[in-house]
Image 1 (cartoon, rainbow, N blue to C red):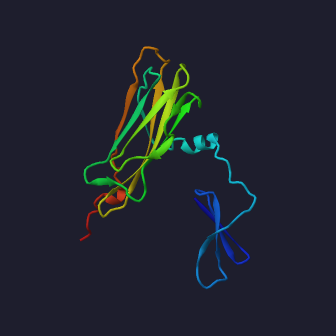
Image 2: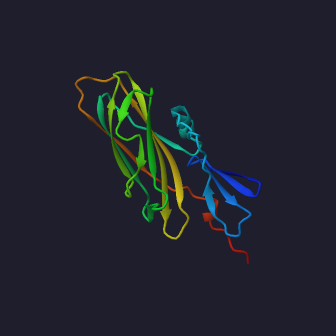
Image 3: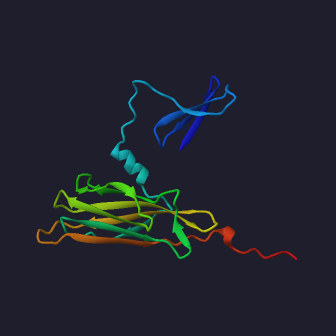
Length: 194
């Protein structure tokens, strides 16, 4: 997200995604974007509660509930597929992030990462508590059709875990999803006037 303000011949840009302030000196003939160096200022701490607020599902997010079972450990196998004629965007990488409720309910190999070019990821988890908990896998899927605009799908897998059963084998939890593009009003045919 970008915000900007002009002051004393400089255009300041708050690059919130990268936690930096950039500027453009409007008095120079050559345009050049520079990063403002703030000495002695620590970057903001990334709070888990702020991450949770950002991850809240929006109105366009699809939620899929998958039973997590009662194993104390296992793998989450993400398998996202796009329709024939579409491919995952090479420029905007499709991503996932994971959290558990309560926060300390499980240890996860990788709390966030990119999906493979085929739309998959495998993440190992080990539950820290025998109590019931819920895991959530948030996905941002970017996909394109040849010679057309790329599309975006927001997706959440909600994985409720039951109380740990001591004799259960490691779980292999499959999280599959088939992306279906929404039909836009502009793609509908308009009758020609005669």
